[in-house]
Image (cartoon, rainbow, N blue to C red; front, side, top):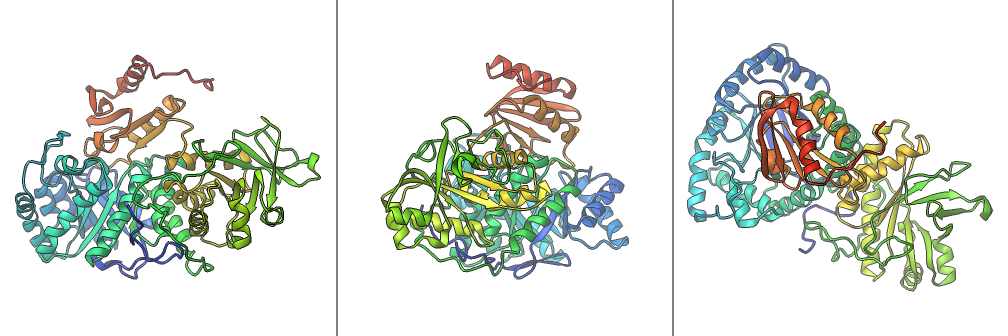
Amino acid sequence: MSCKKYCLSLFKYERVPSAEVQVGELPLGGNNPIRIQSMTTTDTNDTQSSVAQCKSIIEAGADLVRLTTQGQREAENLKNIIDSLRAEGFTAPIVADVHFNPAAAMTAARYADKVRINPGNFTGEAKRFNANADNMSDEEWYGILREKLSPLVDICRNNETSLRIGVNHGSLSDRIMARYGDTAQGMVASCTEYLDVLESLNFTDIIISIKSSNTRVMVQTVRLLAATMLERGHFYPLHLGVTEAGSDAEGRIKSAAGIGALLIDGLGDTIRVSLTEAPEAEVPVAQQLVNYITAKTGHSVIESVNCDSYTPFEYHRRKTNAVLGIGGNNQIAVIADATARKKPERFEADFVFCNDNYNDGKPVITDNGANGTLHLIAARQLVDLGSANDVFVLIQPSHLDKELIAALQKSNIVIIAKPETTNPTAELRAFILKLNANGIAAPVIPWLRYDDSDIASFQLKAAADAGLLFIDGLADGLMLSNFSLPEKDVVDTTFAIMQATRSRFNKAEFISCPGCGRTLYDLQTTANTIKNRFGHLLGLKIGIMGCIVNGIGEMADADYGYVGAGRDKISLYRGKELVCRSIPEGEAIEKLEEIIRQDGRWKENANKS
């Protein structure tokens, strides 16, 4: 698909102007700040606990709070929760989250400031993964949607309640799956057919989200949605998030990579970082991410270049030459920067950038002790030489002039690209696209430098800056520098960014939801136990879901699934196949290991003490 317009500029940080929508007393979209939100994990029937957690989330800095309202009881109790919050002076908008139950949505709309509905299940149909489900005309289907949505719209209009159309990758309707398959086009169509009906009812107080646990899918689909809205002539506010991101560093890095890639292009009016942790913990992460990206406003000018080779709606790894085991079909390379150390250590990285005492202290790169020393030369040296082979060349993107382009066209080298602006993502994207436009197929290793002594801050910034480059397949490796932290932490972060962007896997992947009032087991403790038990199974994907709402759909490409099925009950899946239904939670992890062993996919943990 061609590089059609989905943002204002690929080379300048500039927010895409959206329509302003009022959510309670909070204006969202337009020229307003990017709003932060989170979601409670309490039972919405429990007024006291829900109020307490809403207050904690708001006090942590959230602008909005969402609660699950899976049934009429929960929807009705929103009134008690909201009344209690307002009586204590908390005015932040309250959002109702509805699945499968239009009646609950209509009740919630009388009390909440915003109601989220999911097009994949709002009409109430069971999800059967039926490939032949597209058995009605568009006219018939739109008639059903209009019948379901009209009474909800009337209530929203009368109560000044906004709607979020919240499409989840894991809960697309069978009709959409049958017509489009598991594609970005299908997710956007799931959204736009609801927009069509709502607009026909003259209702536009709408916020939109399209989410996935797969950062590539999430980024590509939101871009396609943005391009579609620009073509339609009405840009609704966008809610951004990576679903089931997980916990700890893994969840933060995955969220920063996916959400950051969109924020950098000026997309997004409100965000939620979904962590399998207490909801209050999500808020400062989201705020730090927003602050970091919006601080790029007014960065140094980055020259616009031809973007014909750019494919923002599909993943294509850039075609490069294989040089020194980098580029071509080789795995994405990880380079450790040890130049500040007197004695370079042996890291898990593929290469080490160091000061070699046998080379008069000049910077060189070693392939971690395997084949000796590989030299790094400056761009000016390459120009003077006219060409070179099998070396690393350090280039600042702004120095890519005609002479350097000519030398690169005659060379077979790896480029270490050292950005200079506060928007290294856009700078490096422009640099790589300029290489493509000039027929230069050299692999590119971005070199990103930080000085954060706080590891969480470093991880978030590095993932936000680097995520887009790997989600889009533009780079062939990554070197991160931060001499304020142990080198192992820096290298581990590099590998985590590769895993978050699905560029290179070095451990098992866990698709873990944050939990909500529908979750009927201790999700956080269980997720940590599963990560510790199965984390060494390289390449294996395990979904850990609080309930069936996103369940087997959101973990569609997972090898195994651990899904809440009721109070302290778990169902286990092999892919989409239900293997064990509603077994006691205390038996489920042992049973999951037994299934993996039976499938011949178990390996003993060499690091287990």
